[in-house]
Image (tube, rainbow, N blue to C red; front, side, top):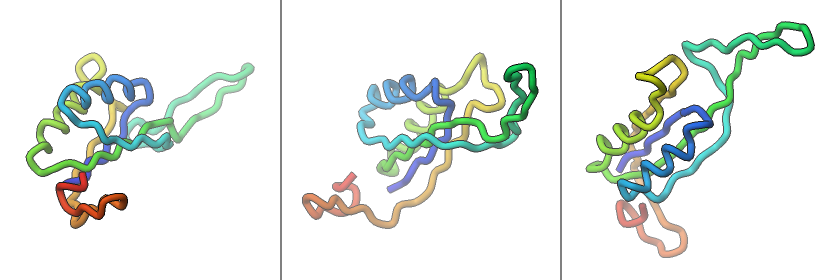
Length: 114
């Protein structure tokens, strides 16, 4: 079992959700977060004053999947988030191992709990 953690642009959330639904991924947790990477923020003008926004809004997606689904899920998220062939700030995807999963309601464990 794997945990996919993806940081994407907020405007891409609905596109990614729909794309994941098409490949039968129905369990996704989305959290609004702020951060920066290579993009390093940007400068904005407000009432004539210029200021730097260092932490940009992002959406963090967490998806628990079976090992067989890794490549398909990563490719689906990647293709849904690319803007005009890919630009800085499109996002990142991390894949990590899940040692154990338990569904509280039924007590199911492992892949059955996903």
